[in-house]
Image (cartoon, rainbow, N blue to C red; front, side, top):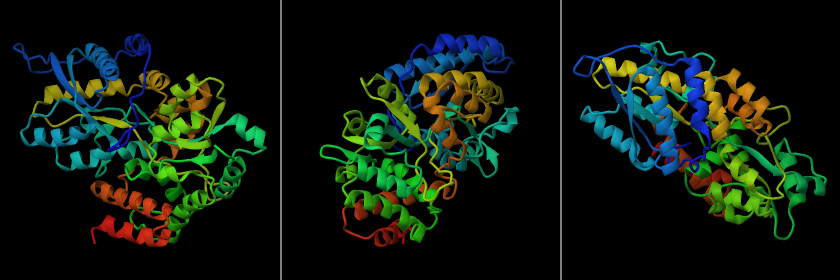
Length: 416
């Protein structure tokens, strides 16, 4: 869901029977093109990073169903996430790109910048009704190049029984978070858990605190950024959060929560299937706490966008675009979201989904104002992300103050 490390593959069950019904109802497809002996396009290729056997198979079935309604066979290939962008860049130079390409949304800027993708308005694809942040994640220089059927973000997951037993209200602000975490902490259990490891996952989890306080990746050595990092330092120093967060992945944070060793955690909706399977675990979700009451959290946007590469064949590109439109049909969005525990990208569909699945309501609300990580820096984002997680490590270990750590982060981000 986010580059270069995305959450584990979401488990989907009984998806494609319902998708087939949706496709039949919505009638995605039609049209002709060139490519076969008769001048008609009969097949197109699709590339993604869904290498998990189950996920690859299920996405293959979905692409096949959309392709059938468009009148083409979709030849579906998956490569490991780390090799997708290098492979795409290599194939772009040799003009052997697939007809339909999935990208993690932060990677779109780099690929679109090479001229390898085609703007979706060339095909009359409907991009109305998408939340602004979601649409901007697929936009490069004012043109929409990619659309995501569903997206994800993070929120605060809490143990309802532990909060009730301690007489703690769900924290909405940073001060309430510190007070609640302290009260919930006891031998064998921490009040709060996050992923603060030295990867882009650690940066991803810190962004809601940085952005909600007015911090900006364009300039990391600011009081707003230091205050956000100080919050995490205070939670560790007070004993409300384990020092082991420096090494935990988001999966580790989840395991700590399920084992009863953390009363609250920051995590994503992809954890819901496992949370639902945990015996005697009563949990709920709230927005990530904000600096001051009344604010709305600004969280990072996760999710993959589908794009139509420049292949030199207008007929094939037209067919690929119609498959892409089918994937992004509102009814298909809802079906996918229900199975994946993700957020439909069109606001109206997301609102309907939140009413149907209350455990997703906080994620849906947060996704409305979620921000793409490349919005400000574009292809320069990875350097800033590296600076951020390096600063987190230095500050939480006590090697530097937040201010000192973020000054170094700024130097890493700018390459100075």
